[in-house]
Structure formats: structure tokens, C-alpha cells
Image: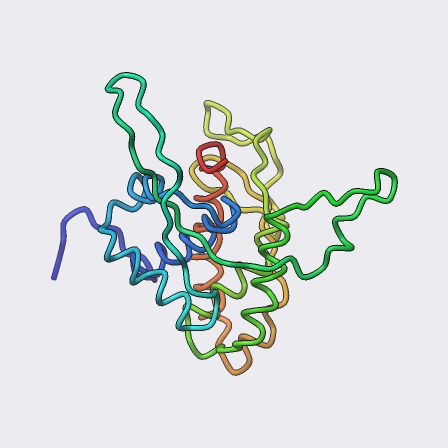
Length: 219
């Protein structure tokens, strides 16, 4: 069916959304508010539940739990409003990496802790023939080293200030520059064509860039 104005993309909306949810879970340290999801994806709660279940079934994450935060009172109406969060139960697998010997305290980087846990979890449930798993596994292995270069901007004349001749580690998305390098993916793409890998990486770059652009709202 032809839909006027629809852009041709080598991936489905649901695949993009599921990977975006995975990255958002990581970025919010497994405390992803439902209103944030609604304002970005504009789907039903049932759809979100299906997305999270797919992420679990393919072997990427434990089952996602939806819980309610303590009620907060609206200053204008005086009514209390419940806020629901989506999250995953995770364990800190290596406390030593967060120990500050100079202060004799643990300073936990929860995003790093979640990625370390999901790296171990998804590796245990290795499932490279499932595209969602394959993409999610690469995202988990690479997200922690990805960042938005907020100092970069495009000039008004359309010419950028950076030499873009080597884009192996950079990705230009919505006039913003991102540093995205994929790693630990070789075993996921054994017997799979280079064209498929390039298609997958293009999708992942857009997912990661979209979430990094949203980092102020995500916290």
C-alpha cells in the first residue's frame, strides 16, 4: 500500500521503537517513566508491554517491570497523580570498578552497571539469528562509549566546520554530530552479508543518536 509522504526505510517502526526503548532504559538507569515513552512513541500501554516482552524473549533483557512511584501532588489542582516507571531488575556484577580507594567509598555509575549486567545477560542468552537480539546486543556493547558532540554545529551556509572526510567514528544526524563506534559484533555477523551489517549499523546509529539528543529530558 502506498502512503504519500512516507519515507522508505530499511527497517520497521516497531524495530526502531524497541531498540529506542532499550537505549532509554539504559540511559534512565532502569527507571523509565511512562509519560516519557508516551510523548516519544505515541503508542498504547499494550504496545509498550509487547515491545518489552520481545526484548526479553529474544534474550536481551530480563522481564521489564512496571511500577508506580509515590504519588506527587499537582500544585495547581491539588490532586495527587500517579507516575509509572518501567524498569529491569539488575545486579552490580563488579563492585571493584566503582570503589574509590582515596575515599574508601563506592561511587556507582548506574548506566555503566546496567550495561555491564546486560552485556553478561545477553551473552548468556546468545541468539544471533534474531535481528532484534543482534541489534540490541551491539547497542549494549557500544552505547556506553557513544556521545553527542554538542560543540559541533553546521554553518548557516550548509558547510560544516569539521573535516568530514573520515566518518568511521562519526555520524551526522539532524545537523548534530555523534561519536558512535560499534564493537564486539564479529560473532553476531558470522555468515551474514556486509550489506546486512551496514543496514543494521545505520539503524543503530539513528537509534543511539535519537536517544542522546533526548538526554536532557531523560536525565
